[in-house]
Picture 1: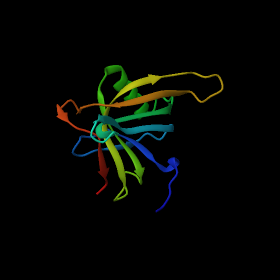
Picture 2: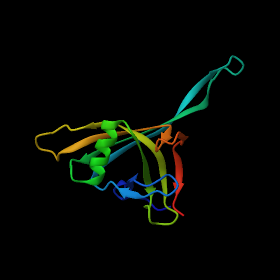
Picture 3: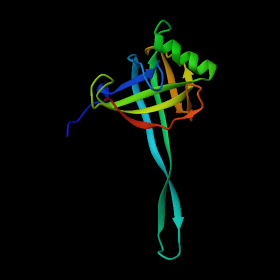
Picture 4: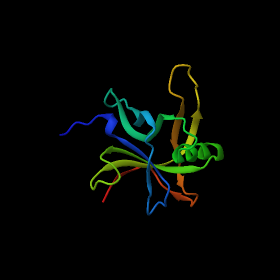
Length: 152
């Protein structure tokens, strides 16, 4: 197994359609925090004397710092998504990139639910961005859950 550093992972925004994605790399991103977890549902039965669990709903949340660049296409698009409360589609590649066959990503539609600007005195001017998965993508009323995407 080959190990990889987070430096080589990629975050993309889809500016195309669902069927034919157009990958735009968010390359002015610093650290990315990904929460991908399941919710355990406790099962308490007298017959075995143990608390057991069932696998419940999954949760996906993505947050990152994005360099404040109003002239950057992706920065402007994310700000627009936040201000207009619209959904965009994202690809979080954890193995490879959008142009390498066999590369893998988590593909998910999301709202930009945070686009703040902390303006710290001695730090790079960034926007703190949070992506929260949505049930619909491209306003087509097509339900789209986060999925593992493999580049053909």
